[in-house]
Amino acid sequence: MADQGNKGISRIVRATRHSWQGLGAAYRYEEAFRQEVWLCCLMIPLGLYLGDGGLEKALLVASVILLPLVEILNSAVEAVVDRIGLERHELAGRAKDMGSAAVAIAIILMAAVWVLVLLF
Image 1: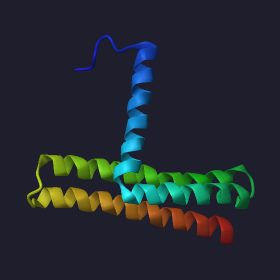
Image 2: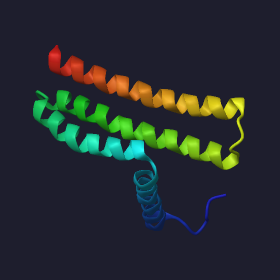
Image 3: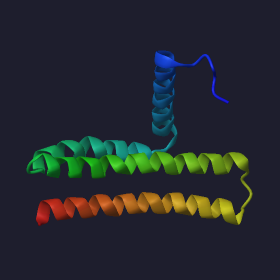
Image 4: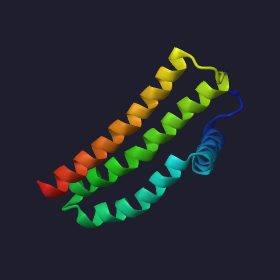
């Protein structure tokens, strides 16, 4: 049950602190996330420069930002699965594979958006 004393602005402050802690943990412990952050640092300005108009710029940037977002969710699933136990289990393997598939789909989506926006 939620902390009853955690309302209003204090709830927002606390939630923001947890969000920053999550981003820090992802950057510290997840190599793929670090790589994607650096990819964002390169591709977001590039997308803003290459996009013709607001919609194209938004599509290019959003497709890039989606990748680390999905990576964080995948890493969270993996952390929970590993916390439960390190022994091999069909459902644990399936959960990790599905998280990895989500990252792969985000990469494909990003590539497709960039190709469609910039070449067609």
